[in-house]
Image (cartoon, rainbow, N blue to C red; front, side, top):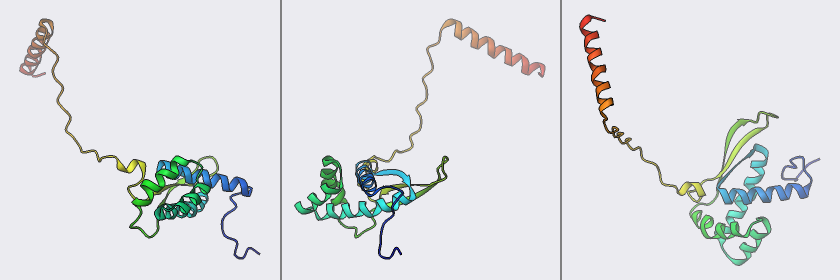
Length: 164
């Protein structure tokens, strides 16, 4: 029986599974979003939300606990300085899972895991406004080009007059 056993095994040994999830959480907090399978994403969400709660607390003990999970000290520093304070007014739901479809090779369900707030690295970019393209300047007229255009205009006028 499997009573009270939480988490997915993901067809890996425990050490491989823990290290894979640590790497995925580090990448998620570093880049703001990652693409993975649905089963891995659901496990990743549990660990990522735990790290973000630690970053929201912001004390030394929380930082040391986050260092035990994350594999990069720079990501821990960024999590506690930018990501944690960005989620200060949110009680939960720090990550979002968007389904993409099936992978071509083995038909595994793919999804994107992303941070919900504007603390993600790509979210700070300014919205692009639609600008009208500038008109291209005409190249300077040469004598040969001017003669060619005049001859072409005469040819079209004659064609119109003759009914062609």
